Length: 114
Length: 114
Image (tube, rainbow over all chains, first blue to last red; front, side, top):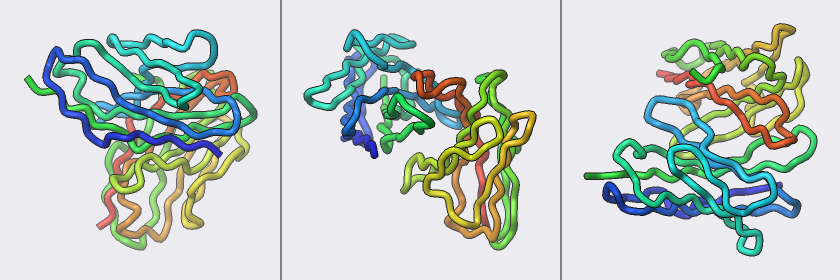
Protein backbone atom coordinates (compact mmCIF):
# COMPACT_ATOMS: atom_id res chain seq x y z
CA UNK A 1 0.00 0.00 0.00
CA UNK A 2 1.04 3.57 -0.56
CA UNK A 3 1.13 6.44 1.90
CA UNK A 4 1.77 10.17 1.77
CA UNK A 5 3.24 12.43 4.43
CA UNK A 6 2.88 16.18 4.29
CA UNK A 7 5.27 17.42 6.91
CA UNK A 8 3.73 20.83 7.52
CA UNK A 9 0.11 21.29 8.50
CA UNK A 10 0.36 25.04 8.04
CA UNK A 11 2.79 27.31 6.18
CA UNK A 12 2.53 31.08 6.72
CA UNK A 13 4.23 33.28 4.16
CA UNK A 14 4.21 36.91 3.04
CA UNK A 15 2.93 37.95 -0.34
CA UNK A 16 5.56 37.83 -3.14
CA UNK A 17 7.80 35.50 -1.11
CA UNK A 18 8.75 32.04 -2.39
CA UNK A 19 7.19 28.96 -0.86
CA UNK A 20 7.84 25.22 -0.73
CA UNK A 21 5.27 22.70 0.48
CA UNK A 22 6.81 19.35 1.33
CA UNK A 23 5.50 15.92 0.41
CA UNK A 24 7.05 12.50 0.96
CA UNK A 25 5.56 9.24 -0.16
CA UNK A 26 6.02 5.56 0.54
CA UNK A 27 5.53 2.83 -2.05
CA UNK A 28 7.18 -0.43 -3.04
CA UNK A 29 6.29 0.14 -6.71
CA UNK A 30 6.47 3.02 -9.12
CA UNK A 31 3.88 5.70 -8.58
CA UNK A 32 1.97 8.59 -10.08
CA UNK A 33 2.11 11.75 -7.96
CA UNK A 34 -0.35 14.63 -7.81
CA UNK A 35 -0.87 17.98 -6.12
CA UNK A 36 -4.39 19.25 -5.60
CA UNK A 37 -5.57 22.61 -4.23
CA UNK A 38 -8.74 23.22 -2.25
CA UNK A 39 -10.02 26.79 -1.92
CA UNK A 40 -12.48 27.53 0.91
CA UNK A 41 -15.87 25.89 0.41
CA UNK A 42 -14.81 24.30 -2.86
CA UNK A 43 -13.79 20.90 -4.16
CA UNK A 44 -10.27 19.82 -5.01
CA UNK A 45 -8.65 21.06 -8.20
CA UNK A 46 -5.68 19.42 -9.90
CA UNK A 47 -2.55 21.63 -9.83
CA UNK A 48 -0.07 19.29 -11.48
CA UNK A 49 0.96 15.67 -11.79
CA UNK A 50 4.02 13.51 -12.35
CA UNK A 51 3.61 10.35 -14.39
CA UNK A 52 7.08 9.72 -15.83
CA UNK A 53 9.88 11.48 -17.66
CA UNK A 54 11.18 14.89 -16.64
CA UNK A 55 11.33 15.18 -12.88
CA UNK A 56 10.37 18.87 -12.92
CA UNK A 57 6.67 19.32 -13.51
CA UNK A 58 4.95 22.62 -14.15
CA UNK A 59 1.33 23.20 -13.25
CA UNK A 60 -1.29 25.88 -13.19
CA UNK A 61 -1.04 29.24 -11.41
CA UNK A 62 2.77 29.28 -11.55
CA UNK A 63 3.31 26.21 -9.37
CA UNK A 64 5.90 23.54 -10.06
CA UNK A 65 7.03 20.36 -8.34
CA UNK A 66 10.09 18.18 -8.47
CA UNK A 67 10.03 14.41 -8.24
CA UNK A 68 12.99 12.95 -6.35
CA UNK A 69 12.95 9.17 -6.43
CA UNK A 70 15.91 8.66 -4.10
CA UNK A 71 14.34 10.83 -1.43
CA UNK A 72 10.78 9.70 -2.27
CA UNK A 73 9.69 13.30 -2.34
CA UNK A 74 7.49 15.50 -4.51
CA UNK A 75 7.77 19.02 -3.12
CA UNK A 76 5.62 21.84 -4.47
CA UNK A 77 7.14 25.27 -5.10
CA UNK A 78 6.16 28.72 -6.24
CA UNK A 79 8.70 31.54 -6.64
CA UNK A 80 6.30 34.34 -5.66
CA UNK A 81 2.94 33.79 -3.96
CA UNK A 82 -0.19 35.92 -4.07
CA UNK A 83 -2.92 36.44 -1.51
CA UNK A 84 -5.17 34.39 -3.78
CA UNK A 85 -2.93 31.34 -3.28
CA UNK A 86 -4.25 31.00 0.27
CA UNK A 87 -5.77 27.52 0.27
CA UNK A 88 -5.20 23.94 1.39
CA UNK A 89 -2.83 21.87 -0.71
CA UNK A 90 -2.96 18.09 -0.90
CA UNK A 91 -0.31 15.71 -2.18
CA UNK A 92 -1.60 12.38 -3.49
CA UNK A 93 -0.23 9.12 -4.86
CA UNK A 94 -1.56 6.27 -6.97
CA UNK A 95 -0.04 3.36 -8.81
CA UNK A 96 -0.28 2.85 -12.58
CA UNK A 97 -2.25 -0.39 -12.58
CA UNK A 98 -5.73 -1.78 -12.33
CA UNK A 99 -8.25 0.18 -10.36
CA UNK A 100 -5.76 2.00 -8.19
CA UNK A 101 -7.20 4.77 -6.04
CA UNK A 102 -5.68 8.08 -4.97
CA UNK A 103 -4.23 8.17 -1.47
CA UNK A 104 -4.00 11.68 -0.04
CA UNK A 105 -1.80 13.32 2.52
CA UNK A 106 -3.40 15.27 5.35
CA UNK A 107 -2.94 18.58 3.59
CA UNK A 108 -0.94 21.77 4.12
CA UNK A 109 -2.71 25.06 4.70
CA UNK A 110 -0.87 27.87 2.89
CA UNK A 111 -1.58 31.22 4.52
CA UNK A 112 -0.45 34.22 2.49
CA UNK A 113 -0.52 37.58 4.23
CA UNK A 114 0.17 41.09 2.85
CA UNK B 1 -17.62 24.17 -12.91
CA UNK B 2 -15.63 20.93 -12.82
CA UNK B 3 -18.28 18.88 -14.60
CA UNK B 4 -18.91 16.69 -11.54
CA UNK B 5 -22.24 17.56 -9.89
CA UNK B 6 -23.05 16.76 -6.30
CA UNK B 7 -26.39 17.29 -4.59
CA UNK B 8 -27.37 18.49 -2.12
CA UNK B 9 -24.65 20.99 -1.16
CA UNK B 10 -25.68 21.03 2.49
CA UNK B 11 -27.60 18.54 4.60
CA UNK B 12 -28.57 18.78 8.25
CA UNK B 13 -30.13 15.75 9.84
CA UNK B 14 -30.62 14.09 13.21
CA UNK B 15 -28.79 11.13 14.68
CA UNK B 16 -30.25 7.79 13.67
CA UNK B 17 -31.54 9.08 10.35
CA UNK B 18 -30.68 7.99 6.81
CA UNK B 19 -29.57 10.25 3.94
CA UNK B 20 -28.67 9.84 0.28
CA UNK B 21 -25.97 11.86 -1.45
CA UNK B 22 -25.99 12.04 -5.21
CA UNK B 23 -23.20 12.44 -7.75
CA UNK B 24 -23.21 12.88 -11.52
CA UNK B 25 -19.75 12.28 -13.00
CA UNK B 26 -18.13 14.29 -15.75
CA UNK B 27 -19.33 13.30 -19.20
CA UNK B 28 -17.39 10.27 -20.46
CA UNK B 29 -15.95 9.26 -17.08
CA UNK B 30 -16.83 5.71 -16.09
CA UNK B 31 -15.15 5.72 -12.67
CA UNK B 32 -16.76 7.31 -9.63
CA UNK B 33 -15.06 7.63 -6.25
CA UNK B 34 -16.43 8.72 -2.90
CA UNK B 35 -14.26 10.39 -0.25
CA UNK B 36 -15.00 11.64 3.24
CA UNK B 37 -13.17 14.73 4.48
CA UNK B 38 -13.05 15.54 8.17
CA UNK B 39 -10.73 17.69 10.26
CA UNK B 40 -9.25 14.80 12.21
CA UNK B 41 -9.08 12.11 9.49
CA UNK B 42 -8.35 14.20 6.40
CA UNK B 43 -9.45 12.80 3.04
CA UNK B 44 -10.48 9.17 3.41
CA UNK B 45 -11.31 6.98 0.43
CA UNK B 46 -14.65 5.25 0.83
CA UNK B 47 -15.52 3.37 -2.35
CA UNK B 48 -14.91 3.17 -6.11
CA UNK B 49 -17.33 2.19 -8.84
CA UNK B 50 -16.46 1.56 -12.47
CA UNK B 51 -19.24 1.38 -15.05
CA UNK B 52 -21.77 0.17 -12.49
CA UNK B 53 -19.58 -2.31 -10.63
CA UNK B 54 -17.86 -1.92 -7.29
CA UNK B 55 -14.07 -2.02 -7.79
CA UNK B 56 -12.52 -1.03 -4.48
CA UNK B 57 -13.52 -0.37 -0.90
CA UNK B 58 -11.68 1.79 1.55
CA UNK B 59 -12.57 2.88 5.06
CA UNK B 60 -16.30 2.62 4.50
CA UNK B 61 -18.50 1.77 7.47
CA UNK B 62 -21.07 -1.02 7.20
CA UNK B 63 -23.77 1.62 7.78
CA UNK B 64 -22.73 3.22 4.51
CA UNK B 65 -23.45 1.85 1.04
CA UNK B 66 -23.20 3.08 -2.50
CA UNK B 67 -24.21 2.19 -6.02
CA UNK B 68 -23.66 3.38 -9.56
CA UNK B 69 -26.58 3.34 -11.95
CA UNK B 70 -26.69 2.58 -15.71
CA UNK B 71 -26.58 6.32 -16.51
CA UNK B 72 -23.34 6.38 -14.42
CA UNK B 73 -24.61 8.63 -11.66
CA UNK B 74 -23.85 7.37 -8.18
CA UNK B 75 -25.51 7.55 -4.79
CA UNK B 76 -23.95 7.21 -1.36
CA UNK B 77 -26.37 6.07 1.34
CA UNK B 78 -25.56 6.79 4.96
CA UNK B 79 -27.79 5.22 7.62
CA UNK B 80 -28.08 5.17 11.41
CA UNK B 81 -26.22 8.44 11.38
CA UNK B 82 -23.98 9.41 14.28
CA UNK B 83 -22.52 12.76 15.26
CA UNK B 84 -19.13 11.57 14.05
CA UNK B 85 -20.45 11.16 10.52
CA UNK B 86 -20.56 14.93 10.16
CA UNK B 87 -18.10 15.70 7.36
CA UNK B 88 -17.68 16.84 3.79
CA UNK B 89 -18.40 14.06 1.31
CA UNK B 90 -16.76 14.38 -2.07
CA UNK B 91 -17.44 12.55 -5.27
CA UNK B 92 -14.79 12.39 -7.97
CA UNK B 93 -14.72 10.90 -11.44
CA UNK B 94 -11.99 9.79 -13.80
CA UNK B 95 -11.71 8.47 -17.33
CA UNK B 96 -8.63 6.20 -17.13
CA UNK B 97 -7.03 6.51 -13.71
CA UNK B 98 -4.52 3.72 -14.34
CA UNK B 99 -3.01 5.95 -17.05
CA UNK B 100 -2.58 8.87 -14.68
CA UNK B 101 -5.55 10.96 -15.68
CA UNK B 102 -6.23 11.96 -12.09
CA UNK B 103 -9.61 12.72 -10.64
CA UNK B 104 -12.09 15.55 -11.17
CA UNK B 105 -13.84 16.46 -7.94
CA UNK B 106 -17.28 17.80 -7.27
CA UNK B 107 -17.82 20.64 -4.82
CA UNK B 108 -18.96 18.26 -2.10
CA UNK B 109 -21.91 17.74 0.22
CA UNK B 110 -21.52 19.07 3.74
CA UNK B 111 -23.34 16.75 6.13
CA UNK B 112 -24.12 17.93 9.64
CA UNK B 113 -25.59 15.41 12.06
CA UNK B 114 -27.22 16.97 15.12
